[in-house]
Structure formats: structure tokens, C-alpha cells
Length: 222
Image (cartoon, rainbow, N blue to C red; front, side, top):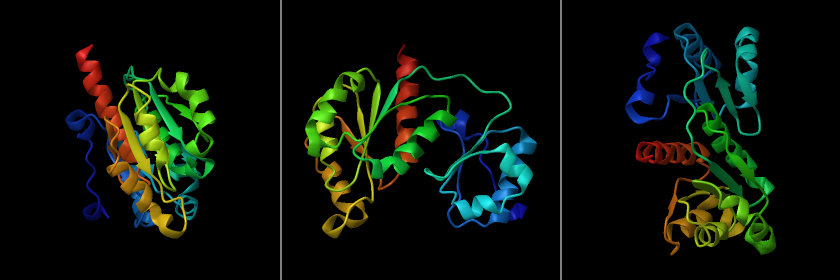
């Protein structure tokens, strides 16, 4: 199976973001082989989109070594020695509890890279008072990841209230014309709120990586 897998162990030094494995479309045997290579090399590894049935077919010894979260469908193989922790604060703001799987994917990606984010959940603007109550806490952070489906109104409202860069993550939460997250994506892309950027639908991993790169630039400037 070596010809099917070529790990990029130098990615962190080259880009500031470590190698990660997208498990969707991979067999249990391929995932097992990837984890075995990482363990032999003494490397930590983040796995995304790892469904419970794929996790279940891994060997008991491998399952015992990794931290699996079924909500976000992520797994973390800890490195033998943790690296330097980034000095950055990130808030992950989720509109509703239905957005939590994507928000947790972002959180787990940050945690894998040594950043412990602050989760602020269920503050969708349909009940604007919830967001306003959380605003002092949100404003304390260097970067804000906003996660929302439906019409995606949270993105523009939040970006108009904070100084920090806001990374919008549209989710596939919705129905009717909002099904699949395209309305939320369009809302993020067409926002007139300055300083708002967006990643693809349900891409909590990508949002966290963007926050990490912002963190790297901020650290260089300190």
C-alpha cells in the first residue's frame, strides 16, 4: 500500500500548518496504514471526516492511541512531544447547535496545533440579544471564526461589531432554498462588512488553518 500513500511530513515547516488526512473515500486499511506510518515516525496527525464505521474497523491498538470525536468526525494522534503553543486567542462563534459539528472540526484542528479556542454557541441573530450578551467575550480574541447555516446573517452582523478578522464558515444546515449551505455561502461572499473572509461550506478545518496562518503572522510582528 506504500504506493498509494505519500505523507507530507515537512508541511508544517513549509506552511505553518501540519499535514492532515481527509478520510472520506479512504478504506479502513488505508487509514490504518497512514496511522502506522505516523506512529513509526513519531509524528502527530489530524484526521478529518472519519466516520464511525471507518473508525470501528481500525485495530484495537490503533484505536487506543487516537482521540476520536464522533461529533466532528475527527481523530487526533498526539505527537510524542508537544511542540510550541501559539500565543493567539481564537473565538469560534456558532449560530446554532446544528452548526456544532463544523464548529468542533475547527476547534479540534486548532487544538491539534496547540491553540485552545473559546467556543461561543447558539448566538444566531434571530435572537439578537444572545449575540449582544456574548459580544464582550468575543471582542477579547485575536481571530473570530463564525459558523452558520440557514441565511448566514451572523457573518455580516458579527463582522460589523468586532475589530478582529472574521472567518465565515457557511454550513449545510438549512432546507428549501437554503439546503446545502449555498444561501449561507452567498451571504458570506456578498457581505459588505469589511474584514470578513469565507471558506467553503462545512470547512471548519480550512477556517482553523486560516486562523493559524493569521496567528503566525501576528506572532512574527510581536
